Amino acid sequence: MDRHAQSRALTLAIVMIVFLALYIFTVFERAFLLIGLHDPIAQTMGVVLLLFPLLGVYVIYAEIRFAVCANRLIARLSHEGGLPTDDLPLSPSGRADRDAAAQRVGALSGVVEQAGERATWQDLLRLGLMQDAAGHRSDGRRTIVRAIRAERRSPQPGAAQRG
Image 1 (cartoon, rainbow, N blue to C red):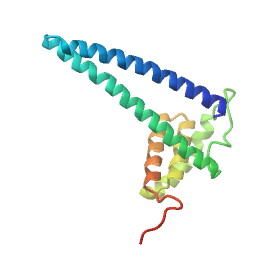
Image 2: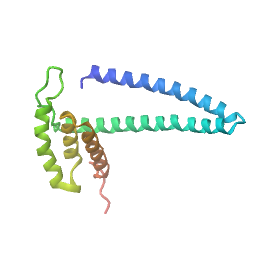
Image 3: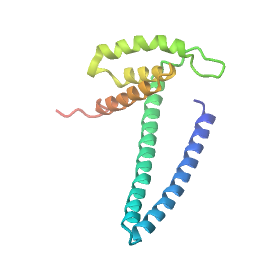
């Protein structure tokens, strides 16, 4: 993704967050009004109304956290020269060719399956990115989440060894 596309995506994300904040403020206001009434049904509705925005905030937080962590790992892998999708043929729309990506998913899956629990975050991320490019978005996302967890468990470069 080039800088212009990243900037546009960030701007859209900020606009969505502003609208979400406005929505949350409005719903909280209405919820507290309902809770303040002396009607048990209205009070119950007010409590339930408090839960929906909180759930929304959690989902947005989880999505932003995923995006930040995934982008950080993608940048590291790119810096190492290990992005698997860089040499994929592109369709006229500029997206990676799904058929070519699907052919590579098998080989990358074999590497990850062979390593089992010892699969590196780099291998998991390569597989996740290739699954995404092949159109298997939910599988790719799950694998990228595994890569993020594996990276957190791995020893950090330059960390002092305690012995």
